[in-house]
Length: 531
Image 1 (cartoon, one colour):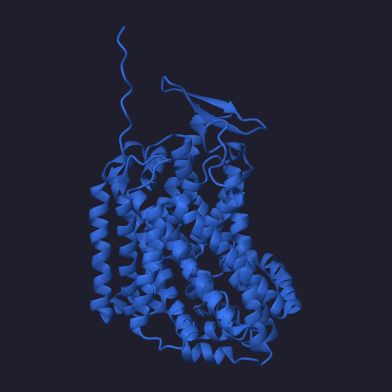
Image 2: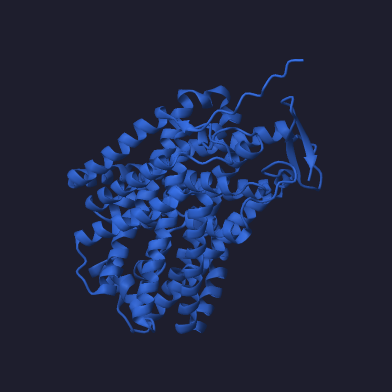
C-alpha cells in the first residue's frame, strides 16, 4: 500500500509584482513632495477642484448606500453566517477586538479634530445659519458627530466582510482585496487585473494614512513643545517622526497579538481616562445637555445632511467637510476593512456589522460630544477666544490652548500628548501590517506577512508624512485623500457583488433561524452546518 503525502501549503512570500512598483512609487511621491512642494500643491489643488466639482455627489451617495447595504445584510438570513469553521470561537476578546478596530479606523484624526472642528462650524455654519449664534453652536456640536459616526464605520465594513468571508469561509490563501473580488471577477482577480486592484488599494491607503500623518505630526509637535518648553521647529518634527516610526515599526514588527493588540488596549484606556476627566472637570451638565440635543438634531436631519450638496448658493461647506470626510473614509476603507477582517475570525456577519458600526460610532460620538462641548463652552462664555486663535495660529496651537485650560494643566498636556502618540501609532501599525499583507502571496487567515515587509511600509509611510507636510499643510493632505478615494469606488462595488454571489452559492435558501458555517470536506467539497 502506497501512502501519498499531502503536499505542504505554499509558504507566504513577497509578491514582487505588487510590492516593487507601489513601494517605489510611494517613495518617489514622498521625495517629490519634499523637493517640489509648490508645484505639488498647485497640481493637487487643481485635481481637488475637478474631483469635488464632478464627483462630490457620488461620494455622498456611496455613504448612504453603504448604510442601506449593511442594514439589509445584517438582518437578512445571511447575517447568521459564521466567518470561520463550525464551532470556531473569536480569535480576540470583544474588548480587544473593539479597541483594535476603533484605533485602526479613527486614530490621530479624532484627537486632531475633536476639540477644534466645532469651532470651525461655529464660525461658518451650514444652511445659512448666523455665525456665532445659539443655533450655530447646536449645529457645530452635532456636525462633527455626524461626520465621524455612522457613515464612516459603514464604509469601513464594506470591504471587511468580503475579505473575511474569503479568508475564513472560502479559505482563500490571501489577505487581499483582489482575492476577495474573485466571486465577481473570477480568474481575472488573480491576473494583472487583480494586481491593478491591489495597486489602487495600496495607493489609496497611502493617501488616507498620509492625511493622518500630515495632520498628526504638527499636532504632537506642538504639544511636545508646550510640555517641555522648547521651540516648535522642523527639527522637532523630524525627531518626533523618528520616535513615532520606531514605536509603530516595533509594534507592527511584533505582530498582532504581541504588538498591535497591546498598543490598542493601552490606547483605549488612555482615551477613556481623558474623556472622563474632561467631562467631570469641565462643564458636565452643559456637555450632557448639548450631547442629548445633538443626537436629536442629527437623526431629525439625517437625510438632509447626508444628501446636501448646496448646488445653488455654493457655500463650499459640503465640499470642504462632508465630501472630504467621505473621501477620507473611502480611502481608509481597504486598510480598515482588511485589518478588521483579519481580527474578526469566529464572528458572524451580523456581529461584525453591528459591533463595527455601533461601537465605532458610539466611540466617535462620545469623543466629539465631550471634547466639542468643552471647546464650545470656552468659546461661548468668553473664557478663550478660540475662533481668533484658530484663524491666526491654526489647529495645533488651538488644541494645545484648549487642553492647557483643563485643571492640572501639566499632567493633562502630557496625557493628551501620549494619547496622540499612541493613537497615531495604532493607526499606522495597522496600516503597515495591511500594506505588507496586500503585497504578500499565500497568506492565510492565520499567517502574518514578513517582518521586514511590515517595517518597510512603516518607513514608506514616514516618507509620505514628511512630503505632505512640506507640500502645504491641511489643504494638501485633504486633497490627497479625496483624490485617492475616487478609483476605489468601483472596487467597493465589486467587493459587494463578490460577497453576495458567494453567499448565494454557498448557502442559497438553506438558512433558517440559527447561525451557520461552511464546513470543508477532505474531498474538497463543502457542507452547510448549523453552529
